[in-house]
Length: 478
Image (tube, rainbow, N blue to C red; front, side):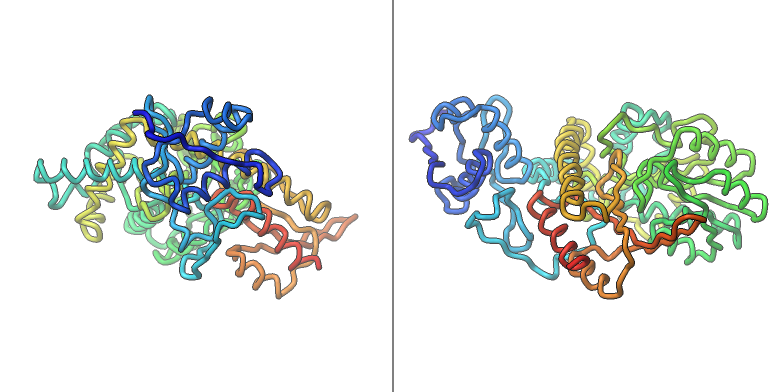
């Protein structure tokens, strides 16, 4: 459909240093002013590049970034349009990718400030896709009279979609009966702990030296003894685990092998195979928390533990929350039939209704390939943000900071090579980074002290990353 009038944009008077930022900010400003109304079709990239006398790839890059942020939406064979569901500037710290000199208003709301140890950027959710999928799900559920109590194991549609994804993307060969839908990975951890506590009370659960605190608290709440196993650049130390097994009756090992929490280390393949062999020999379960498998950047992701030989005792827990937003509350557990049937019975006690509409909507998006496309787009954005964060830490802190580039994930494990001071806690809290880990090491030559933080980069634009790192420097070093 032809526009009745030609849309003209002028970049000459803008103050930004690059054409990219000039064009991006100009489009956002025109949307905020109402000149480009919701649903307005923008010129094609070739047309706009010719009109402005700039490179077409620059226009395409701007359109892609603004689409990812929610300002624009691309429709196949139709063009690029202003989104009907614009980012909410009243509650987000910063929506635009704009250069600091932009006049676009920036507001923040304290009630929306949450700990950022590696969370997704909810500003990049494809709202129109979700809206359409939820509408279809509601119609489908109403027509088939399925608005009542659903299957506590999860809707057949979502489990089938998960089965296809796990087989094609994760090499996991399982059956639909061995998949249980849960409200996020934390519920999966809780259910696993509850089932194991019924079977083998008063025994030990092994967790990594540094581990995910809510998981540890869950195991403690079920009266397990917690023993911590060593951790190094190759992941969980299986030799140290062997020593623990010979001294204690271990019911399970909890691990985050793909991107270890909090250190971001990926467990090596030989350690994975050794861990699986030990679980079979000594009859303990492995609770595999695969919370952000989708975001691996530098190489092909290592297959999950449950996809490898001798994985009979693996309880695999995954989540879709990292792809979109934590509030989505959709996760899944893959395990043997006995574990899944026990979970199903426990779910009847705490979550009989389930969330049929969300499950149907997510199943539709998975079957249509929309989640795969969105994940691919987010992977590119998050990798760029990881690289920018690494570069900025190096430029700002220079030789007093040390970071091993993570192969994936949504956070950096940042080592500061100076003493931790009490007032640093307030600085980290102010910047929503309230996870700090002190360390000290001593050998015959050196005595070294310092501390680590887990710095989540995925939910931050480059400007936000730069601002926070510089504030850290001012608080720590000046």
